[in-house]
Length: 324
Figure 1 (cartoon, rainbow, N blue to C red):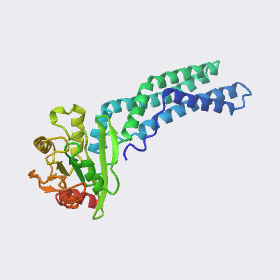
Figure 2: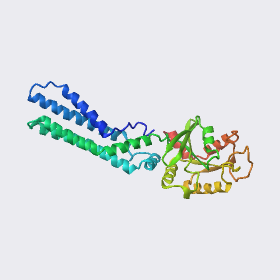
Figure 3: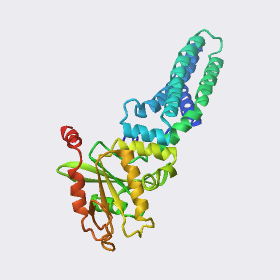
Figure 4: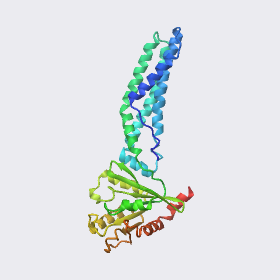
């Protein structure tokens, strides 16, 4: 997954403690016999501390993926969850701190060589470096929180993707679980208490994805907040076909009329191939005007629905995968 390898981001205190401990060890490794050896020891402390800080700060920035080259789906979801511009600003602050400390170290080593007391200059250098690292502590903490949130994003590749929509309790998750090789992976997000459920299966040596969208596509447009609307926008980048499930028995708790109203809204939102399927045929034979019918409880018709969904995936989306 794109954010999976981003390591924990340390606080300013953790970074400073680590660098100054290493600097102390560097000094203890020197034999101090005269003024020159004392100068070497103090120089070694400054350079060691600066190198540790610079390397760690630059490493933090490099481990985050480039937002300029990120797939649109992940870019929009990252913007929904943590804010891409704020991420860029905080990463830039950390990059600046790393570069500034490297510059300071060279400057203070030069001052140290002509100073009467190298230890005094080294303490000044440590003070300046500490101030710089402390100044980006807020950025470090923001990036670690962002890292923890982004790591929870499920793996959603470029393969053919079925988006499953419909009101709660109509059988969306049951369908995903039935057609996937394993139970759906549930990932929690700030914009929904339930999260996205992602299932995978293979057909004709092509990996397909099925995404259940509880909390996003199961209520009217006017009830969704701006964050949910952005998440729906992100789903447009990966969705190739939509399975809209209705429950004609209305045991889901919503009238068929209400369910069909949401269907019209989703058609406007996505504009991609769609199949409307009536579920719970084991308890209801009501004519819903759906394209197909099934029962996720007994499994009747589920395979036929999946076959039909695969048939209407645009050929170019299958060709892209075959060409990789």
